[in-house]
Image 1 (tube, one colour):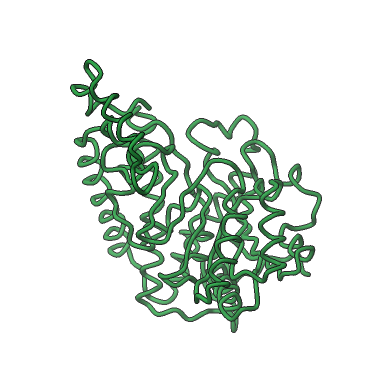
Image 2 (tube, one colour; image 1 turned 120 degrees about the horizontal axis):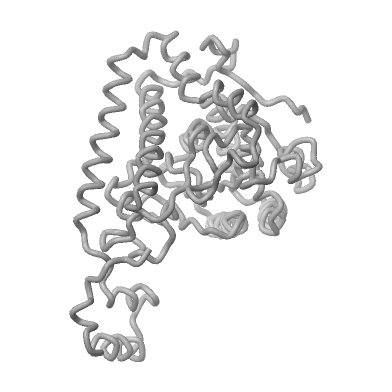
Length: 368
């Protein structure tokens, strides 16, 4: 297996000979718009956190091509089992901007009613499985869901994500091992962004590449330039098609870089080399894709301003609406625990709400 990552978009914006997937102009512009909107969303959300208006945020800056390119290879009926650095999938699948923003605030409009950390989305409406903080758990969950779909004879593919740090988790082994044995229709995408919080990738694994780990699980391992959206799409489309034909799982390593800190609670300047950061900053996936579109006559300043301002307007309007909403009601903590509320739980709810002052405080603020 080669250690070289597949690349399509050259530095000057040209596509490597015979490698361009030749997507339509409409799709190319849509993918670029989604990448820009994802960057705008990240920047605005981090600003909200710094202002104390939301409690926490995780950015995907520098990794837009990796998750948007891979996600576009999927059908709308397919499922995602994400980590917490793939917000562009929500925008790609046209999730409600209000659902996204209300989740940050944990208000009454939040699908999870404030029970999750910010940016831990759960949107069944777009087949986006709940994000969880424990590292790697989504990998074995995706393998199991894919096994179930195969047993039921469904034509569904599952895609799940982790970072380079996630490859050290127990669930990485469990997920890939079970998927390999049962030939589950799942694509494992490891976004190798070189840092698992403050641990560099060379301190994470002794493997020459992460893609090489696939061999031990009896599946193909592919290494791709994660800042090249066309290369990511091409590799993942092949993996998705392979899974749909019943040929089993694939491990895709997208080589990219986490430009921001691990989260709003982290300061990457304390452990990362500035020269390394600057070198990767120059490989910005949005700028790279822009050069490609410009070569094809599909990009100009007017288009850039249009997609940027549209993203800002939609987001700012959603933030205004979210900040006017009440917090989750006290009674909501009893809802969604079971499909049908038991008599015991109903009794507990009534007793709780009857406590002095509980009814008046039913619309209290979410305490994050």
